[in-house]
Amino acid sequence: MSNSNQKTVWTEGFKQDYKAVFVDSWSAYHGAILLVIIMAVLMGSGLFWGVFGGIKLWGDYLNNAIGLGAALGIKEQLESPLMHRISLMDITLVMGAFCAALLSRQFRINRPPPLEYIWAATGGIFMGIGATLAGGCTTGGFFVPLLFSSASGWAMWFGLLLGAVVGLKLLLWTLENVTWGMSPVAVFPARFKKWYPWFGALVAVMLLLWAANWWHSDEAKKVTRALLIVSGFAIGFVLHRSRFCLSRVFREPFMTAEGEMTKALMLAVALGAPVAAVLISYGTVDPYLAIPARFWLGSALGGLIFGIGMVFAGGCASGSLWRIGEGHLKLVVAVIFFAWSGSTSNAVLGDFGLLAVDVDIDFLDGVAEITRLGFQAFMPDLFGSWVYTLLLTYTLLAVWYIFIRYNESTSKFTVF
Image 1 (cartoon, rainbow, N blue to C red):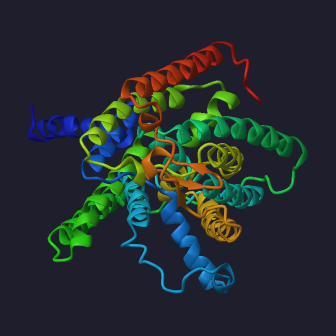
Image 2 (cartoon, rainbow, N blue to C red):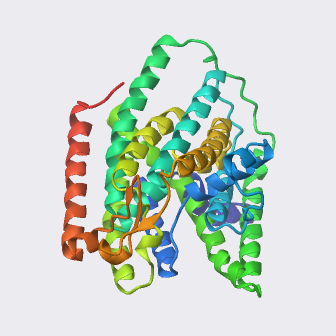
């Protein structure tokens, strides 16, 4: 065998491995398992994943920039987006998805038809209102509370289901009755696509250097944030590679009857809930730091409104961010209006006293926060037992699974 042929054989295996890891899409179930591992690392450090808080901070900056900050009572001096815990994770999530898109050569500036920009803006506004009412998006109001055994996560789950159905029906009506602005736009070829993997590797190296620099900083806050840099990047990378999107969890069963993403989410909750239970029991992480005081009214109503919004926007909060990293301009518009709406809604609802926090020393020993939209419903404290809490969690997951499997077989609950 000639030297050139030997070299070809020698490198072919590396090319196949690269393709399997960085080009071919991962299973949604693999994505779910990896997300649980990342969440476990965060919880083991006393932290947790969030999205909406960072986006709302961006909206506060936007409102101040356009002159509405003073009228809404938003502070002039806001925390730096790079030092705010959740904002930092949002930024690095986008970077992780951007890196994954470059490594797979899937990055492309995606310009939708004009009407979809209007859908994006509308969806973003609804998501901002819904997340404010629920105390979080599909991440902080639904997924994380489920892992932390909060009933508010299940209340938002119910609202999201209804919101997805209503949103799909409204979207179907617009598709049947609105013809303006749906002409496809020109697609420009990527000129430097062959160099994308090198750019992606550069992004990864720069982020690791950033994290290492903060890890060795003399400032305690930067040292803590170093883990968030790596965690946010890893989440964005996993979300892109597995195409994991919480909006698809609720949208796809009613649109196409496809339930793979929904079942992957169930797997994540089934694996993550007992891990969180152990860490909470040992005092590693405080569940009341992650549970919104919104059960049940705020969670359910917020889920309904957020569900409608994410259907029109084409993604939830985390799904919108990782798609921005992939180059989707529609989601850029959605996140801008999501941020503005979240900031504005928070200020307006706060003026009406709906978000004011109180405690009752006679209720749950005074550890649960209470607002006019609900309270922090930590089920082990409500039931007095982790056994009953996890039993209820797995029962609800089983009922949901049966519904999804039945719908996959019959398509009985599809809207389209």
